[in-house]
Image (cartoon, rainbow, N blue to C red; front, side, top):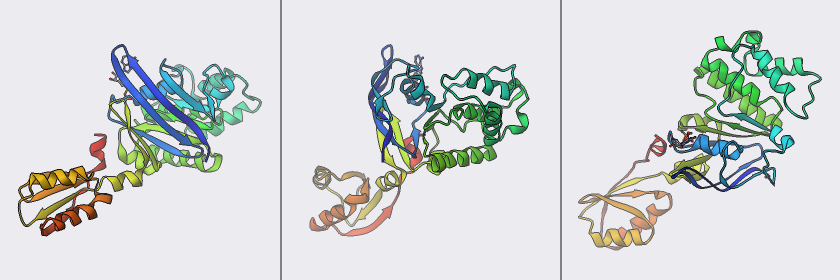
Length: 298
Ligand code: ADP
C-alpha cells in the first residue's frame, strides 16, 4: 500500500524546550491513524509542523514527494482542522464560499451545490444561513470539518476533531470520516488524548511521549504487548533468579517475597515459567493483569 504521508526525523523546539525530538511514522493510503499523547506532548505542534505552519527540522513527504507548502496544488489535497478560525459575523454558507473562492486552482462552477452538500455532510444544512457567532462549539467543529473537506482531500489532518461534540455529533463525524476513507480512499490522521475515541475509529496508532514516537502500530498489537502477569511461587524469589530472567530479556519485577510481575508477557511467559521450573520453583498461581492502555495517555 502506498504511503500518503511520511514523517522522518521531525524535530521542533520552542527556544530551549525540545517538544519533538525525533518523530518518525507513515500513513498509508485509505488508512485512519490516531495520534495519541498526553496534553502538552506535542500533538498540535506535530500537525502544525507537518503543515509548515511552524518551522522545524526533518522531512515530510506527501504522496512520495517532499511537501512544499508553496505547492498550492499539493496543499489543496490536504484538508486541515487545526486552530480553525471563522468570519464570525458571516453565515456558515458564506464562510465556505469565501474559502472556496480563495482556493487556487479550484473548480467553483458548482459551488452553491458543493457548499450545500458539504453542509449536509456535516449535519449543518439547516443552519446554512445562520451567522457563525451564534453557533455552539460543536457546530463550529462541524463547520471546521466542512472547511477541511472543501477540496475533496486525499489526506485529512484533524486536531482533536471530537472536542466539544455531543455523543450524537461524535457518531455522525466518525461515520462520515469512515465513509470518506472507504469510498474515496482518503487517509486521515487525527489527534486525541482519549484512547477510546481512537480505538473506535482507527486500527493504527502513533503514540508520542517525551518528544519521541513511543508506539507506532496497530491497536491490537499494543493491547497484546500490554499483557502483564503476576506469578506466585512456593518460595522466595532470589535476586540471582530475577537478574537471570531480566538478562534473558524478560521484564520481571519482584513485588513481594514469593511474587513477581512480568510485563510485556505475550512472548516471554512460557520461557519465564520454564526457567523458574528448571531452577526448582513450583508455580502456585498465574494471574493475568493487563495494564489498562489508558495509563499510557492519561
Ligand atoms: P498537545 O497538542 O499534545 O496538547 P502542544 O503541541 O499544544 O501539545 O504543546 C506541546 C508543548 O509545546 C507544550 O509544552 C506547549 O506549552 C509548547 N508550545 C506549544 N506551542 C508553543 C509556542 N508557540 N511557543 C512556546 N511553546 C509552545
